[in-house]
Amino acid sequence: MDLRAALKQYFGFESFRPLQEQIVRDALAGKDVFAVLPTGGGKSLCFQIPALVRPGLTVVVSPLISLMKDQVDAMQASGVAATFLNSTLVASEARERLRGLHTRKFRLLYVAPERLMLSGFLGDLGKWNVNLIAVDEAHCISEWGHDFRPEYRQLAELREKFPNVPIMALTATATERVRGDIIDRLKLRGPSCYIASFNRPNLTYRVVPKARPYDQVLEFVRTRPNESGIVYCQSRKSSESVAGRLNEDGIKARPYHAGLTSAERTTNQELFLRDEVRVICATIAFGMGINKPNVRYVIHYDLPKNIEGYYQETGRAGRDGLPSDCVLLFSAGDVIKQTQFIDEKASAQEQKIARAQLQQMVHYAESSECRRVTLLRYFGEKWPEQNCGGCDNCLAPRETFDGTLAAQKFLSCVYRVHEKNGFGFGLNHIVDVLMGADTENVRKWHHHEISTYGVGKEMKRAEWQAIGRELIRLGYLRQGSERFMVLELTTEGRAALAQRKKITLTKPAVVPEQ
Image 1: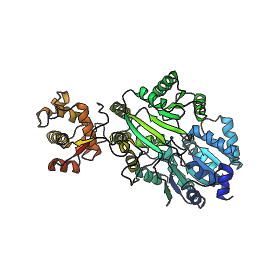
Image 2: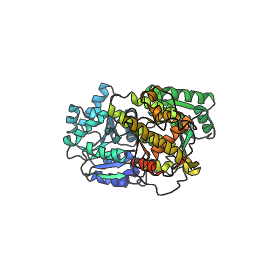
Image 3: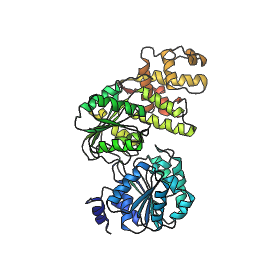
Image 4: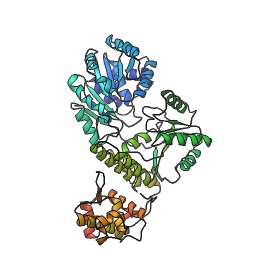
């Protein structure tokens, strides 16, 4: 069958989206493919079309068990012989589907990675004329990805087991480091690589000081009386609380989180899709594969763990191309909470990675730079414009001031404590020394004896914290990713200190105390 005929017959589209057709043609030519297509970019179609136009079985590896049924139902409704195998099936139903696979009844099989890598299952797979293996959410294989899953690591064996079957790896969000890791771990051979632009021109990004979070959400939602939106919360408790209070205030809202029953989640999701509920208050469990084009806003009630997650969640807004808003409520208290979660992780390596990712997220929230530039640069993409016209920092630039003296004091203090003890200290300890605080640690390390002790008493503690974080963002300081997150002078920081370089700082939109 002709590709465009299949596209029209099974999906109702007249033409492919950018990159889709090239990806499909390379897969059909037997090439390995690596593709980064941002949320809403039509990843699924890249492996569904090959399954339709040639004989054999296309295997789709996905961690999203709840999504498998939705995609299979949609394919079956279009007349495609598709099925899935995962832990939700009773034994008799799983056996029936396996019989269908043995008789070559299906063209498309969705399977969870832990099921796929069972030795007996891999043996069966070798008998089913597999023509393509598509690894969806491929970032899960990389510990540097935002959703690392150990079971994905076993997928490295696929190349050895199926040396002649092309592998397609797909993800919506991956930094350059994660892309390389995916290609290496899946042993892709000279893959065709397709990286779509991460820019979403119809989205406006804003970071708002988090003061009275519920009231701020309510005020925003009331300005959008007929529009749908998602409020992302860190905890199940928050999602329940915010949804409940919105209902009390006359706005139809529902929670969505992993603690609800499958039936409750399905009901709440369908009410939202049918516009019978205006707002979903969700943990990150919501949204994977949800196709609701008219979400007009995404509000982050709490600070996300990393930029990848934030980008993917904001990408639920404005899939129809119409203007939509992404609002992040930010406070230093959220940074402390996230740091505490990180400290609870078992592995020191996991902690290190999570701290580095959180630092990037905090830099995004506190930066006076264009939000779009910051996001795109994180994913290795350049934005050519000076002013994007679609973020708070470009629409209303923040006030700057000559911060040379304050920067000199801060950088000098970092230098002096290191000189005194031979190792560095964290941001809050540096602030204690600048403020002349009489703490146990200041006395223990004799920092009340150094020249910079108490030289910053004229400023508030929160102001010094904001200055320290901006000096990190500007590259004058480096913050370690080990537990104590010590500060070190960079080469630029040493030069600025020695040359008394003029440093312009930004007045923070909010000065939250940590």
